[in-house]
Image (cartoon, rainbow over all chains, first blue to last red; front, side, top):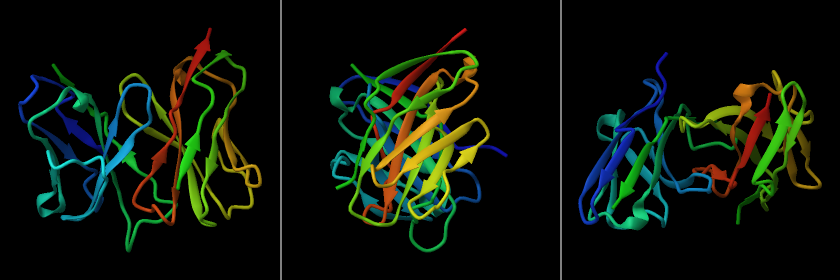
Amino acid sequence: DTGVSQDPRHKITKRGQNVTFRCDPISEHNRLYWYRQTLGQGPEFLTYFQNEAQLEKSRLLSDRFSAERPKGSFSTLEIQRTEQGDSAMYLCASSLGTGGPTTNEKLFFGSGTQLSVL
Amino acid sequence: AQKITQTQPGMFVQEKEAVTLDCTYDTSDPSYGLFWYKQPSSGEMIFLIYQGSYDQQNATEGRYSLNFQKARKSANLVISASQLGDSAMYFCAMRDVTGANNLFFGTGTRLTVIP
């Protein structure tokens, strides 16, 4: 039973460059979430997919950010023209559910991608 | 608006002792879920325990129990018989009906278990 995997674990980039992260959810999970965690804070919601459909985006997700989940399997999160403020841990989570998300829905997280923008 | 407050930035506990990590929450929805996650230095968020707002009994999962006081809007995590491997960040989180797509986290408490 493999968990949620994220690649790469660490990414160092220069300001202005584009970066892309990948998330592979637990295989039977239909829901996928992206969160961002900065130092000393809890994770903050960025976006949510049910199968291949992106159903919600946080205001934190500026137009430089784009997420996709082709075919409802793995997901990618791309940040264009990175800024130093983008430095954070980007966490992916997945879950299994029917209908809309429920208050008891448990998320399974990956180990995250640590982004450093120089 | 949802809000989770964890007032203890850091806690220390002697190995084999019990420790309580505090969490208060705020929501206007009558239906909500409360979660605790553990984040070791590896970065992965590990689910520990869940409490539903309508659950009559406090949740327990092995050495973890949740002291749920609905009127006070608190959901404290109790870890019994602490082990060195319990040293990590602990996050309280909530999901309510209004923000059902969003698991809203507090700022966390760093627990250090002393041998």
